[in-house]
Length: 301
Image (cartoon, rainbow, N blue to C red; front, side, top):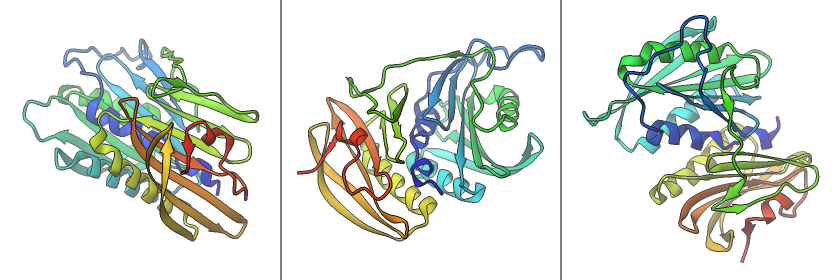
């Protein structure tokens, strides 16, 4: 299993979409059957895993996770959603069929009576590949629209191109306003307030900006626990002083005791130039050096 690809940024993007996405219009008109559901939407890449869509009437996310079971992805996602909700959301679980596949669905709605938005989240196994996570956010009156959106995304090809009719957004790859670059042999992908640099040796840097600093500790903890659950290799865990783009903080260090060789993974979060920023860094192969991609933002003192 490729550990570098099993831990990824979109957890954060999914949570941001659920908790603080753009306000939706209760009177948005769904597309006609002959028209793409995603006509007029803006699409942003979520690393290499999938796409996030901002549309008139709904927002949506699709992400594909290689080598991960649907059960594992479901449990980790639900735990993270519930932790981030901090008692503000109601959760209702049900079973359904999406694109001919049995799926587990979680409906999430705010407890506050003035909140007028709902999110629906589902996990689907993809035979021979891994698991897929799809999420749609809309108003209570438009839940049938979300059902069509989830059905369409659930039936897509593995890591498919963005939906027809959507305009792909090309944001700058910046961490707290500072542009990052991809070292030789690496590729850089970015979203709105997030980014990823993935290299040929398996090393990887991910970052995401959160809506407020109160979520940083929980986000780091959830990232660590998710990696442990999905990675399923022995490890030694420690806390070490570190700096994220020059700002001193504390990082969680997992030393993976993989038979193929030692690898190191780092998780941290702090406010960088006023922006609550979370990062994770995965070393490549058996190298004990901090990857070049991570050296741009992570240091130890």
